[in-house]
Image (cartoon, rainbow, N blue to C red; front, side, top):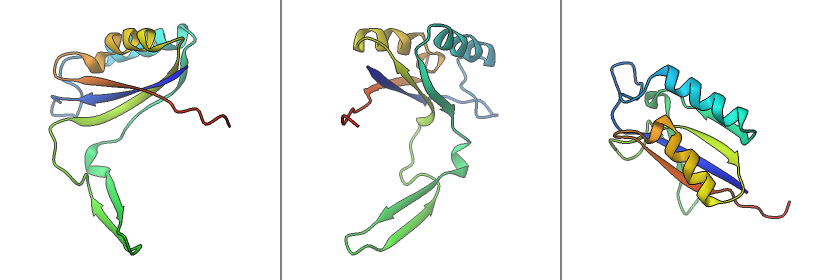
Length: 116
């Protein structure tokens, strides 16, 4: 079953990197996911200041806003999609993710299968 691990950074340093882990931590985790054969996809997202929000009103009018709409202390920093047998295994991989350390969090959600 496929699960998405949504990586939310809490505290970030002056370069926008997660404060509680290093590049080496991420490299090791990425290698472990790939070596385990569960990696489906994953990306790190560009800096939050590059974000654009689009909303479409009831009459179809489009509103485009620079940055995220709501101010928040947590930032979605990236994601992995993994293919594992069940939720318990997905939670184990989420707990190993450097993004879950300290002020960070990893949200685990199953990927919907519409039988395509």
